[in-house]
Length: 111
Image (cartoon, rainbow, N blue to C red; front, side, top):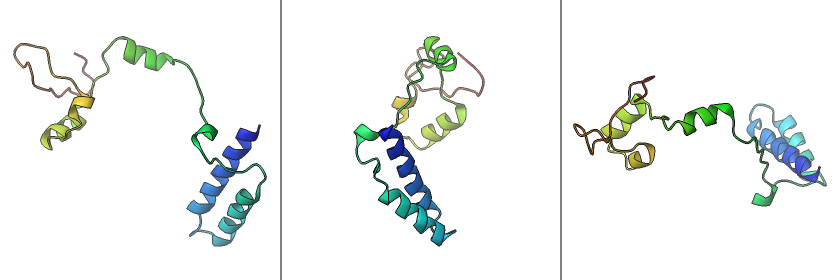
């Protein structure tokens, strides 16, 4: 329960900071409440809020079939600017006609 309280206080402080220009009085009140709480705030990685949902049906479909492909708009941008991250997003084609080239995939098409 202590971890949930830390999460709540951290979110309250974040909310206070984000609304500081819109309502300074409420922002100050919320920030002071979050900081004064005996539960404290998230201060290190051990306090991070994580939810483990296992494998969803969507991730199973996308990744088990091996056909999760990059979209044409992102590919065009990355090719056009010679983006160095391109190899992390796509792999070279195996087809003999275009071997070594990284191809753009049309939206909605699966090869």
